[in-house]
Image (cartoon, rainbow, N blue to C red; front, side, top):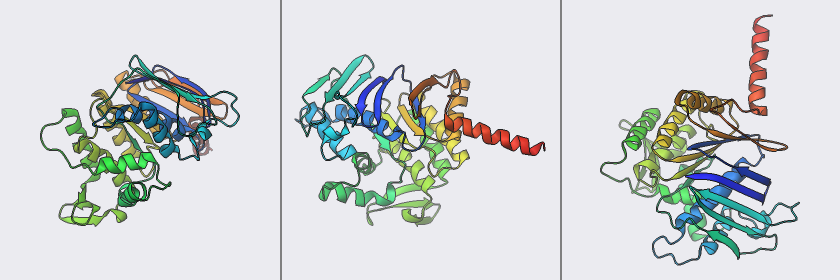
Length: 337
């Protein structure tokens, strides 16, 4: 499990030392505050560790990292990721349990990262990034754009996800928590999303009816992605899942049920990093923290940087929360006029 992340001069993030991370970690803030950027920074480090020494891959860890940063953030050169106002290099230090992976580089860096230390070693598990935009209807386009055309557009979070979704569903017994989570996800779907090998397209099946994925609701596709990754066993108990704007395309009831499933998966080992600007997401996670006595670290982004708190202790001080409370108080005031 990732227990700490320390960044300096990484794009919009001037400095961040996020410690005592838990199984579920929440980043809240307004649009453009750096939530997605932070998740991608952590994801790039995790995928570097997971691709290192896997199979017959003979690349150095520094080579994998440089390529991952280039295709995830898609700058002209990776040195452009260094904060523009910074006088010192970009650096990232990730602590996985008690082992450290860290690196740094300056603005002139193109492809070679010379300052890197890795005490983590190879990982057999997979991490995944679930973007706010849906992927299933763009699945083949993403693969062609990156695997064949080798062009910018869809970054590595999309490519890794598209490749993971193509793995066939595995048969046999799995972790009981995964099986229970899949059943609950399929209950939410009221059907099943499957890849049709003949047509080469995803489709939604409800009873005997089949619907093209393009006309299927966005929320169904989001839920189906997690169900698929559990079913084909791309994810295991040591995976780390990054979810950008969990609330996107989901109504409040679905958000609540989806987070219940996330909490169940977290209880069996999967670690989650969730970015959100939804009061419903924060409130639901707060209730889970209180009911389960579970530490859920929160990083609240405002214009002056990130403030750290824990939902086990309190709701965070954040403009999103304050505006939700203000609207509620306004409604109550109108009702008593």
